[in-house]
Length: 173
Image 1: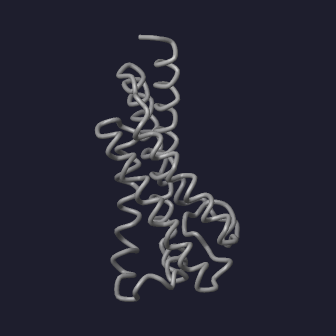
Image 2: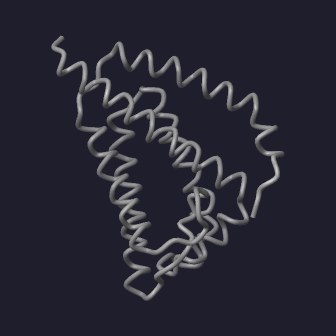
């Protein structure tokens, strides 16, 4: 295997691990801070009200599932394509809200500021969609995938073991 292919494989493994951890953490944070997530979801006027309860449960579950699939390279290229579609769908929702006059709102991801400008959220969602697409299209190496899989499994076990402490940590508002 050439050095260039190994380098691309290493980059792809790292990219998939980053995207997987981001999606997994975002889904877990939405579950942990469900009221804040529910309120953020309500800011998206493009979503029909009757779909809000379904979306409030389905989106975090989809993020956690895609995150796990990206972290444990089972269907990593397919999961990366689905993640690209999820991020693109979110970008479309932000663009629709921005067109409807909503310029500052909570993205619902539970990272950083609770309210950001729509252009920042849109750029971030589009960038994550492109990164996910790149992760789906770049070749991976099986050795690196196995190493990433083992390290990721260890991290998931450590997070699971400390989740009760994380959940009990007071949040600064």
